[in-house]
Image (cartoon, rainbow, N blue to C red; front, side, top):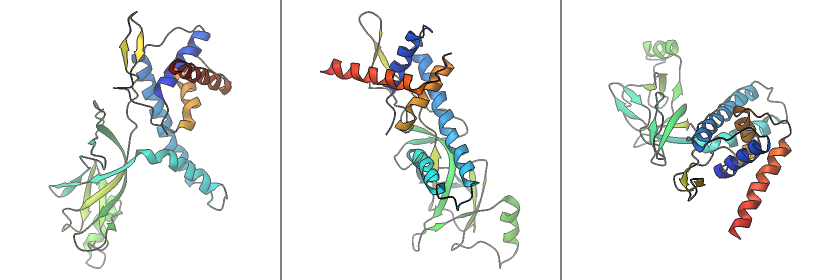
Length: 254
């Protein structure tokens, strides 16, 4: 479940007001919130790498790894690779039909996503079973092709991943390659219209919710406030403020 961007922004404003630390405009909030979301997202992978170094006999190992994997799961998708000039390019579209951007290009529409990390390539021939393509390092990739005893075959294909391209062996594989991958979270947007008094009024249309797990809400708000110059040492302060915002919204609707 995502984090409600309106609740977060209003909670930040409430705490800033109580601390007499000024005001954050919607545009300033959107930029800060997008960076905070990316920081927390990238921390998932640092935490996962750390967990992979923990002895697997640890009884809590699988639970901790599963927890991190659940947080990453919403960003997992897949798409068909495009073949050309002897190599496969990364997917142009993901499984949901979104345009996939790479090479650091920033999305400008909700129907665009940014490629973050390659997952597993699968070769699915017209006749036969889907086969995972094994990734090799450059030296191994070219050395095994020097002997017919070790060369890649369609039943056991291999690939080299460089510069966002997949070189697949055997060279007879020129289609039917699909890859799973992880996309970046979409940029946070608290969209608004101007009210009669010139105030900012939240509009759900055109807004982009925070795509992190809802369990991250307190940490998320803490980091946004830190960027705004406020250090909150007691998480309960944020929980109380967020609840106050939610209660006000319920009262207004009723």
